[in-house]
Amino acid sequence: MLEELEQQYAAAAAALAAAEGRETLAAWHSATLGKKGGIYLLTRNMGALGPDERPAYGRRLNEVKAELEAAYDMKLAAAEADELEAQIATGALDVTLPGRQPATGRLHVITQTLRDIYRVFGDMGFQVYRSRDVETDEVNFELLNFPPHHPAREMQDSFYTTAEGVILRTHTSGGQIRAMREQYPEPIRVVLPGMCYRNEQVTARSEMQFTQVELLAVGDDISFADLKGTLTEFARRMFGADRQTRFRASYFPFTEPSAEMDISCFLCGGAGCNICKYTGWLEILGCGMVHPTVLRNGGYDPEKYFGFAAGMGPERIAMLKYGIDDIRQFWANDLRFLGQF
Ligand code: DAH
Image 1 (tube, rainbow, N blue to C red):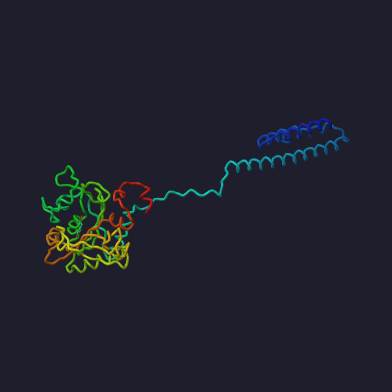
Image 2: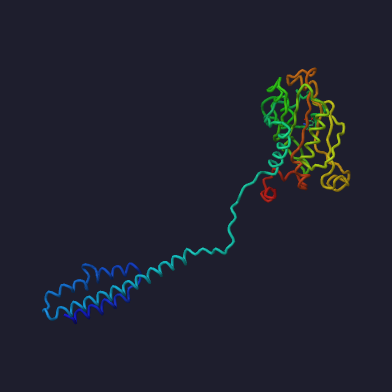
């Protein structure tokens, strides 16, 4: 009997030594020490033994079980450690590698410029008023004092739709009419931003689509001094507190008198550089007092109301501010360009 026990023990120990991996070990355990396992079943031999052999056999059997159990525990722990090791190795994370930067979006440089403009005028009480991109010839031109065949139309050739008299707006000035007709008889302080379209030869200096921001103030006590004060304050907030402004007489059909506003060059401070073409001044916007006919077309009696208006090009402002030399960059959708702002 003892001999059989020793044989089984040797066989079980050899099988255990050869077993690799948790599954194999578990199979070995149930085949050896489990309730139906070879070693466990040896307990049954006890009954066949005489009373003097029984204690020695029982003691040895317990020893063998304990040794196999201990050896099994050690192998199992080693197998678990190996498994963990392998998992760590395959799922290796090298925390010393540089991180991957998530691609974050940003606002288009013109959107940023528009928001800068809104902020300055917003502080002065102007609200953003959105007018339409597809506009009638009547609002875009006629009500602004450009009758058919007026020579000032020459500078603003548009894109025409198949609907008679419906075009893409060439400037934001038509929005003045819509804002006035909507807000009459209230006083008005609005900025009218948006995309404009012109049938132009596209070059580094002119595009067929570009944004404009229009400014309109209407009230019963608005004077040219308000225009100068508002626009000079804008120039200082937008381009630097020490900016000088100058107003040169100009012509627009919808303003009388009309002017163009220059600011002292913010790059050279007025001394002269290649951006201001050595004049010390940068042309920034057109402006003027709203023409009486335009006020009337908007519903406001020009005997009682006055207004001033201005129009500027955010692309031009951004070009000056960031030293961009080609206007086509803005709407070409090249991320290498857009990502710089
Ligand atoms: N609409 C003019 C243009 O596109 C710009 C402009 C000039 C707007 C003078 C104005 C203004 O409101 O007063 O060239």
